[in-house]
Image (cartoon, rainbow, N blue to C red):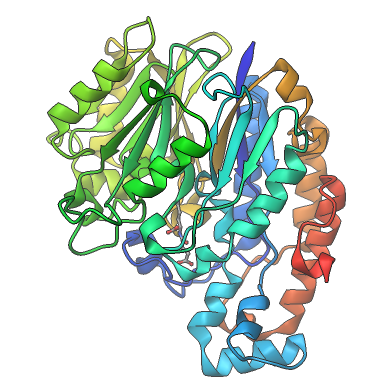
Length: 446
Ligand SMILES: NCCC[C@H](NC(=O)CCC(=O)O)C(=O)O
């Protein structure tokens, strides 16, 4: 038996709205709104618990330590921690906000993962994403790797790779631009890598307004590192026009699960020929279902607002598929009508469940952004650090931990307050014990 295990990012104690992601409509439009980290973390935990209760395997990905002081010291802010915060607040508040971001919650961007069945050495491969398109995200990869190593600590089963070179040519945003199509989670599959532009080839035309965060070269490097056979990797360009309309990652316009690809009809460049290539490359024996949503039913704008395609598409223990959608989809008439139609149409998706993830959604992160998918067989699952797996007890423990440590309000002014740093580090130090992670943060290693 092979399971798809979803590792959801636990929202960190400094979750805030800083408007840091040009090209991500929600991030920009909610800049400087007041955030509620406690509510954000509890909303995320509710989703994890619901997935666990449905009978799925659910994991927990710890947050990163924020504020991160190393980048501030590196660019010349000096003194005690409190002095560094005070000076940065005064002289470069935007940089300070970036160093406070809880963006590591969106674990679809933490790494790209290939299951052992696809890799020639028979191991599960992980490559942390360099996230070098946005400064606040470019400071994530080292801690991500520390966390992955603490969660998947067995070298017999798990191979960890360093993130790609920190340079736009190798822009890599992890699993948000990667999906796997296969007859089942346990069968050999086709890994679909979707890139926005090329680092080296100027014939490949990217978007003109917003940045393309994933390059072809990065996707190719991952396929090499993960030892994928040529037949098991396909590279398709994202439609640059939709990037310019706010589709900053492919998982805002397409999602795959087993033998289903659910996508908008403007998701890919030259959509008809892109889909033909995917159909021809599919290596399964079952039929590949491509559920393509027409623009007349759901516009790109509605897709971006509702995050329909940032739903998780999961296989239930019964074998049916369920769309795990943000509540915003139920509130958008066009999207709600399409979902109703789709559930009744001839395809494997037969159920939907909506979640309130507003705190994350307001920064452009839906259900699918919040999770990293790792397909694991029984032996591999046994080798995972058991403390990072969701259970009744873990849910109670983590909810209590959030309620004890988190604030229910963070404003821009709070970022100058050194007690927010102390509270956050104390909370995370305790969390590393709850999840048995060891010393993964800089402040624990100093
Ligand atoms: N996969 C969803 C990622 C969302 C994330 N948003 C942010 O970082 C917003 C942070 C802020 O603006 O405070 C991003 O754009 O990478």
